[in-house]
Image (tube, rainbow over all chains, first blue to last red; front, top):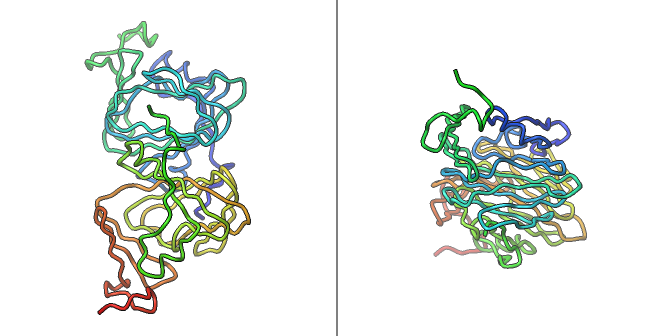
Length: 162
Length: 162
């Protein structure tokens, strides 16, 4: 059945960010629509943001095109140029390797949701605009480091490496 | 600016189907959002259907994942299993090489719209479920033939080949 039953797809909260950075993702949950319905070439996720929540740390992708459309509520897109309001039905595109870091924040007092599409690639690197951090992705493995590849410091993650 | 100004993207009507088959696409127009905003890895198109119009002839893709979300009005998904209603916010997924041919028809008396995402690939073959027709796509070139590769007959296209 091609129609997706959204009521059967769990909304997962939590984050893969290391240590205390994961706490910044409170109030965000994600339904993996595409993966739940057999798509492998791109991700199609419905992201739900409680008031005050954000989509991710502000970042940009080197390999993967990304596209969003707001489906409920009011979202604020934050990028290198400042803040832009996105209402239901409005869209934004983030071509691969465009270094304009971006994320979406719910600054309203109501829940908001958006659809996000991102290409699946074998390998990916994303850089974080407001932190000295990058992530290297290979398959399901996410490796977070400083932008020069060295370990993240404890004051960023709260993790004391031995 | 990542935000897409939908008012600046033309809604193109017409069809690449050969001969009189193109007439079946009356009432459909498409805004190429992704291509207009720098995305190259997948298509992100907003398709508008007047009452009675259809998205395409019923088909399936061999190489490309496809995903739709209804954004306005009421759509009817028609596939091998019959008809399924899709309201605003509802989605459907069509994994590459799944031979369940599909299209979306506006059977309502109001305009309807949906977002469609499709992977871009170098080469693609799509088969039409209700006709003896396929299309081979290489870059921007679309070659329509019978499923065995022979020319389409004049009674299908209205084109009398010399």
